[in-house]
Structure formats: C-alpha cells, structure tokens
Length: 452
Image (cartoon, rainbow, N blue to C red; front, top):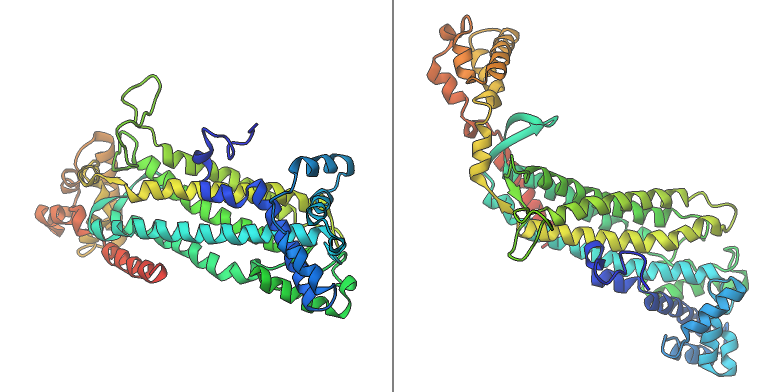
C-alpha cells in the first residue's frame, strides 16, 4: 500500500525520480545501517577491540539477504525500539557465537545517523549531477538568444528592454551558485556520527578516536571533531541547500509559467503530441513541468523549516527532535530531485518565440523607452525638467493609448531640443539593452568552467 506520492505508482515520477527513490528505499536504508555495523566491526577487529575473525564474520553477513523484515517489524511493535529488531535478525543470520560482537560499544544513533549520512552522500552526488546537467542543457540559451530583445519587467509591468540571453544568464548564474554551495559544504556535512552512548567513546576506551576514524574511512565519510547527536546543524544545512536550490528552480519555473501565459507567450515549456492539458478543453497546453517545480518548492521549504526546528535538541540526545529528520530528509531530497528533473525537461527543450518578444517591446507604443527619451532631452535641458516632460507625455500616452513620440512632440521645448528622428531612434528597443549581451557572455564562460 502506498500513501505518499513519492511511492505512488502513478504519480511518483511527478514528485521525484527513480534514482533518488532508490537511495532512500526501505531496503537501502536498512542496508546502510548494516553497512555501519560492518564498518564498526571491521574497525574494532583491526584495533583489537573484538576478535578479528568475529569482525570478518560480521562483515561477511552484513547484507539484507536473509533479513526478515516482517520479524523486524514485529519486534519493533513489541519493544518500540528503532534498531533492536534489525540487530536481532542480523545476529540470527550470522548464526554463530561471533554474533555477540555485533554493535559492540555502539549506540542506536551511531547507526541511524551514520546510515542517514551514507544515504545523504549518495543523494548529494545525484543532486550535484542534476544541477550540472541542467546547467549544461540550458547553456545554449545564452548564446542563441544573447541579443534577442525582450521586455524587462519590474513590479509586474514593462520597464526597459533586456535580452532573453541576459534573463537566462540570471537563471544559470543563480543555479551555478547553488552548485558552488553544494560543493563547498560537502566535507562539512558528510561525516559519521560514531561516538557511543553520550559521545565520550567510553565503551571503546582509548581506541575511540581511532575506531571512529577507521570506520569513517571504510564508509567513505569524514570524521567530525566532536560528537553531533545533539548538533543537528549538518542536517539543517543539507536541508537548507535543498531549499535554496529548490527556490531557484521555482523562480525560474514561475518566470517561464508567467511568460507562457496566452497574452504574453514569449516562452513556454516544450509540448509533444499526446500531452493533454485539460480533460474538458482540448486546446489547453498546461505548464505541467513548471507547475510541479513550484509546488514541490513549497513542500521542500516547509520541511526545511522543520529541520531548523529540529536543531533545538536537549542535552546529549533528544529523539523528540531527531526523529523528525527521518521523515523530512528523504522527502526533501526526493522532491528536490523531482523538481530538478522538471526544470531540466523545461530548459532543455524550451520553446522561445522571438517574434512575440519583439511585438511585446512595442506594445506600449514607445513607453518602454521613456528613460532613453528622457536622456535625449537631458542633453538640452536639466534632467529634472526632462523627467517631468517625459512624465507628462507618458501619462497622456497611457490614458489615450497613443504613441509616446506623438505626445512628446506636443510638449513645450521638445521640438527645440531635438528632432522627431532623434526621438524615434532613441525609442528603438534594440538600441537600449546596455551590456545585456556581455552579461550573457560572462555567465556563459563561468558556467563552462563550472561544469566542464
């Protein structure tokens, strides 16, 4: 039975990806716990804490093969304990006196935290890969549309001309910063939490640091300076990275969603034959990918808030905060993977309509270039006077749906300050995009370095 959309056979690929689901799958989670038990046993054997033969036997059986999950579940119902059921089954599978050395000196959180970090490590790598792939697939937008003029909008309205290459550059630069953040935080986040009952390593004696270090090496994780059963900042940082990345994906998706509206239709997510937007309106081409990225972002940010709340742990251990991570960490990573998959599908096949972009630059009949007109007049009159002159003409142009140049030529002093041809040249959108093309070039070169 499936309740969550992540596991729903029909909708699971709308909210996540097969590769990310596999990382957090139930079987995988228990296997990661066994992987930690294996590493602790091997390290203990090498250090003489337990017999080496026992360590090797434990390591050889640390597989989910033979583990009866129904028995694990039944044990948990009786004891209410998160790990003991799996340990009992593990010892049964070993079927030897050496099984008594399983979990030697360790505590439950050692296993679950470190097992979670193994899953986060794999999820981390997948997210980095997805971000890099999205950047590579979207990179051509910067070159192809470097000089494609479109309306720049502020506060929801037409402001000044920009280029679509510049707009796309802002998307990729922001997503690129996310990739830099993921890479920079990796060593800080991905560490073991093998410290014993209260973090003193007491059960392993003087070999505690050595056991932690060797276990970390076996698992391919780092070793922390201090115990972190109560310090949940690493998990909160990972969640925050997910929220930042999701927020970027949502911003890009929302922009595409808005610019795809019928009245604008400058860009839109790709459409293929067979895709249906509405069960009742055959003409509809609904923005499926962008909508999902926006939806998933809301849930990811909500879960991230929970991860920040979970930092308020009491004393040396507090499951009333810690256990919240068991729910939100898989959900956050699974949904971020889904969001990035939707974004990649959108950007890699994005439909761009330059003719609509150009038409929209002329929608306000010259008002889009009011700033340029003001600077033309300011060559012959004080800037405040030029601003007021263009302002008055703009108000009439808005109210009367007339051309700005016609209203300007009626203003006192304009004809003496410049010719109609001067203003007409100034009102050409292509002549006033500043360094938009260079911005696209700069970001493109940066992305090439980032994902080479």
